[in-house]
Image 1 (spheres, one colour):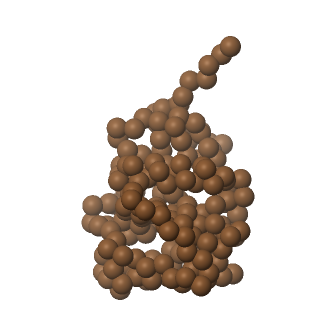
Image 2: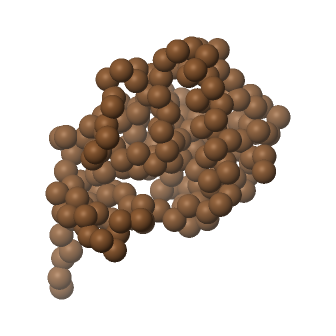
Image 3: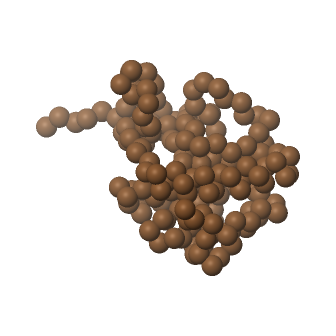
Length: 182
């Protein structure tokens, strides 16, 4: 019986450099390559979250938001993660124009795609939180709900609820209903 070897981030970089992978989105999760195939609905939800975040950053004069940015910790050869949306409270330390961000974002947001399982999303959240992310939002389009997780707690927000930014995004609030608008 053959045992498949886990890929490293070096293997992953080689894989990403192939011409046939140039316009595709991949993550390395525990040594396994996973392709991300976002839908139009996924993109609309992403814009509905990133736009208010960007406006809040302009209002406060600090922070950075990005979409589909690769994060690869220097001491973790098995993972190169690609949160759907990443927020960084201190943008001055980040200006990555090539390669992966060497830290995790302060806020990581994952939008459930049809092929994602709830377990997979929660595992992603656990990885982010264990590696420095302060808050994770798991967005569930079919339930029109958002699960907000920290190391110590989790809470569900539904259409009539408002997600507050807390210490990470002071003064920020987002009606859950607006996340799912077309």
